[in-house]
Length: 524
Image (cartoon, rainbow, N blue to C red; front, side):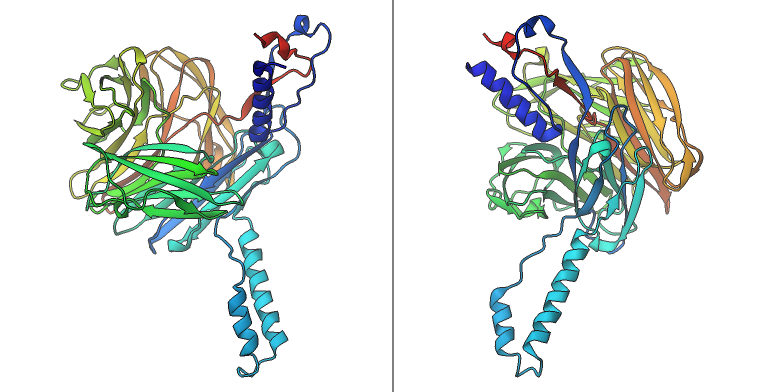
């Protein structure tokens, strides 16, 4: 067996481990003539991680979980999110001291052990109790938590709930640093993340949240890059994240350098983690900064609110090569070049920031960045402000992955929800489905055409008789590529609270080779 065949089998095994179970049989006689291509099937197992929502006692958090109805999915399965809190083992030395002092305390040793055992059992039961568990595909469920005790969550879905499983946490903080609306979609574990747009400045309190879903510890390196290159860090290497636990790390404790714009690179040496940056500002509120799409010579940042009063782009290119990025805005009328910002120069290995002002001027818009010939990879994110000075709120839009097949946004309401869709390279047709509500309502579906090079804030469907919140699922029917984001907005005390989530493909379907397919024809 040559190296190509070994690689194919290893790839199929890895695919089965991540997305479900794929059956691959040995090729039989004449199999080469019977090649039928790969079948597209729903994944059979997936996992999600949600960071700890807030350290504020004034925080009010809503967790939401949802799986769209998927044709061909299994008729059984579960989708459960649990607290990621680490349950430590009893301290043997402390237990020994309890035994020695049992008579002195006037308690029976066995009673004391019994009480301790009952307490440990109760804590274990509480830790294993689901925070959210789906009952059926097509209907979202929610749970609420108040204050700083809301936990990070770790969850898995299998069977009929695995394909397209999505979860989100939305937090409202009434006052203090980071006040406003903070939202983040729960994400899968990985081994590398890029976060342009973070900060170690005195006006910001930025945390990198690391969540480990596995039964063994993960070891993580956190690298910081500023305007002059990599920042010297004191404790950024070899951060240990305990099994099934969450670790928030304050970025300003990793370096003595205070910089307004920083790119964070998370590299996992051992294991895997989920990662997200929580960026909190003294004056302009705060929100979550999700990871940028992988470094690429072409990036799309979808869904700038039409009433944005300031847009700040932060970009970074790994390596030593400089690049001049071509900047275009996908507006409702097509692609335009912002005056004065036709190109942006990035130096290799250095974070660059650009103030683009009121870029959208009252219209829907998405930013399209292109490196010459796509030869130099870049990561990027935008910080967006709404409102006037003194009553501003901030949110972040990272470079996004396209909606290749399907994506879902959660916690939508009848008012205050905006779905923004862009097709920068070619026209596309999409189908948008509003699910049943968490407390009642009938699903509704509409189809839309998105013209090439444009961004449209579409009037998304709302469930008939809606009660509670609902999910919006976007499916690409033809054309593309399509990029999308969803904005949630409200007004509190004259401050325009809002949060924006880009909608990456849910990767709920996987191509599985036919059992009779002859893999040997791919050998060289």
